[in-house]
Image (cartoon, rainbow, N blue to C red; front, side, top):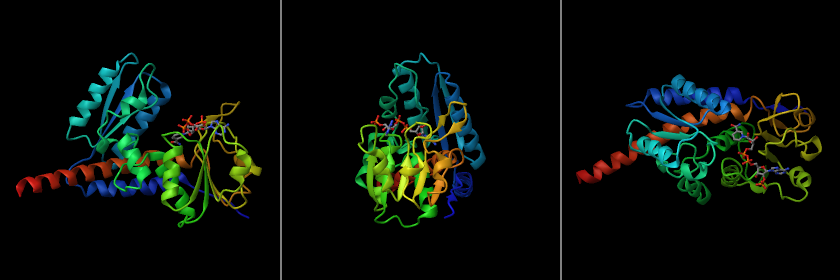
Length: 292
Ligand code: NDP
């Protein structure tokens, strides 16, 4: 059997081109604000990449940098200023934030219509209840696009998601459920994880443990999506899936690097344009009600 290697870079390029085209047709420029608290080197790189990506598709970027010792009130004030800024349509608080700040609490301060990470209770609730008008977290959204690039109809398939974080595992499971999969969400307390994984038609790993998913965990022909970002003992970037073991067993595999990772930023750009459109539609509806 030949395994398809899912090319996340190419899928992300296509999505970015679509976003750039959508932006070019808009009456004004969508804006994305990124808030970075502290000096974590990885976070700084992520923020720089997000700002560069905005520029490449015509989205205006706003950046706010706060010191690691910023208080909750200071971060909240920054979020509030972007909530009130009509040129800003998407707001992203780069996570994790330095302790003792609570990232989960702070993201709730972002206006739900500008919450392009989809982490507010409103957007998480919309996704869980099947409403289609919320903002969906970027990485699971990107993972679903990759899955559907090889399996256009997921109806009735067994999907196993390893990981139950609010950022990835839970929204991924909700998206697969919306696609009519039979979904199992596995985690650190799951019994017989290998056997649970081995029955999956779609196996998504988002754990943070280098090469944990082995060849005999995978149902032959399954679609395997690796989300993990890890460094192995040699400092080499790798995912949660043992690519060398799985590559001849899976039907398709999104590898690390080059799979889900590039989709995350592309989906962030798409979410910013979606937020822009929803905010504009809401404003237009309000104006027409006032005019009646
Ligand atoms: P979290 O640490 O929040 O969640 C990890 C999940 O894995 C938890 O639900 C945990 O279970 C589960 N887990 C941990 N150990 C095991 C185990 N031995 N067996 C089964 N389940 C286990 O991480 P995230 O969801 O934020 O991220 C997961 C991975 O995905 C990370 O490597 C992260 O870097 C990567 N990531 C990549 C992104 C990208 O853009 N490509 C974006 C987001 C994340 P429990 O709940 O029981 O503790």
